[in-house]
Length: 350
Image (cartoon, rainbow, N blue to C red; front, side):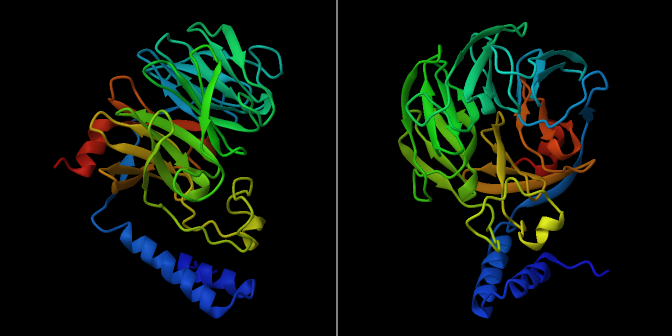
């Protein structure tokens, strides 16, 4: 069977749904323009992972995000947070299935660590955030289901700032809520839309240089705010969504299945994890292209994948000393570890 290129597949999709020729040509030209603009002056390379974290003692089910401290790597999974040392040895698992304190209804999504050393975890299906101490003991929880201040519908990303304020994105509400270190609601910002300061299915966040960076996943961009929610900037889009049913979300559509007859994920540009290195470079995962992209001064300067390959990657995090980059290879249920010196060598220091 002939292996079609993505432009050929795109035209086949449009022919199948009987899209007007002008629309098909316009979409294809936009896609080609987007692809060309994003490759000009960009380093593209394949990098060998220095190690792989997986555990026979506690096999991953559906990993999502990562966070690190000086000693450990915390990986979110179904009903659990799995804890590993820097050598990749499994230390403990935190949580179990349920709705009581210390339990998780389903996926554990975002993770963060505050200056107290507390581990904060987004318990999405229980519509709350839970906090644990360094030993994995439950400390407190805040939030419940609802659309009022301090409530959640589908919480996703979480991050803390230098004052231990807690920022939580909500995929359904399309906003960010900010809480005190102990979980009291303070304020919120953002609303559903595609304009400046508007969000659509926001997920991961990072705070760097007193700026809040938000993966505005539904709009395929990264928006920048002050910690108080004042809009500052929007980094360029990283993909063009072409779909037979544009109003539908792609998140729950299995990749490369029979559903592809209805949906085309080519160049969707699904931005997942966000992290900064110690050279002020922003890294993020493009889940649909199975690559990691690097931004410097607002422009993509590098994009890379790995050996072994990445499938539907999600969260990323640097080690506390920035010597390693961890990538949650969700589709393969493992964590890939890259030496940052290898990445720097591949990019080429200026």
